[in-house]
Image (cartoon, rainbow, N blue to C red):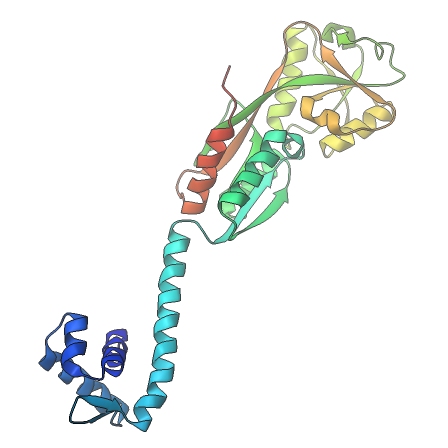
Length: 298
């Protein structure tokens, strides 16, 4: 039995006339009669009884019509669901983000806009460092990931620019420079730096080291921290100083101050990573919205 047989049956049942049903379906009357007879032979029951004006459903036909309508309705729903999924309008979408990315206002605005545009897509969020997120992207655990963009792009990954933000110095409140509005990085040459391990966040690590070297010194790498919030807490505990993206200043911890960098700003870029080899409609839709929120590249 095929769906067309059920469609033919329902057309005849609705019109109560094979000729009118054939005209409605756009096929000839003899082929339609043959299909109805074939369906009856397959079921082993008569579905219609002939009258002087056409046909009427038998008791078996009445029973079959109930389920036939449900089957056709389910088929329409299946088709609509498949088409919606093909357009990226339903399903699940997995977004990864670094801790610092979560504080960037562009990220929350972008996700909110996507949810409004595609309310029937279920979002799941996964936090991790850059290395973890790129691994998640590779094995399909996330569809896109907000990461700090470095100079090296892993194979099979594309990066869409989202935002550029300055870096800030974070100091213990007891530090000799804590009350200065702007800090010359060369003044921190003798301070230990609390930093994330390079393998966890190579871009952030390299930006900090590069900024210090531009200021004339190699930073003294002190206590390592597993995540940026831990960096701030360790600075508060006077393990050293650090440099963090400006959005991290939203982490308000007693015992620290955030200061601007004197001279030329130290920029760090936020990007949206996605796989090149596969681009489902949901990912393409998210990237399209992301590009409308991206700040100009300076």
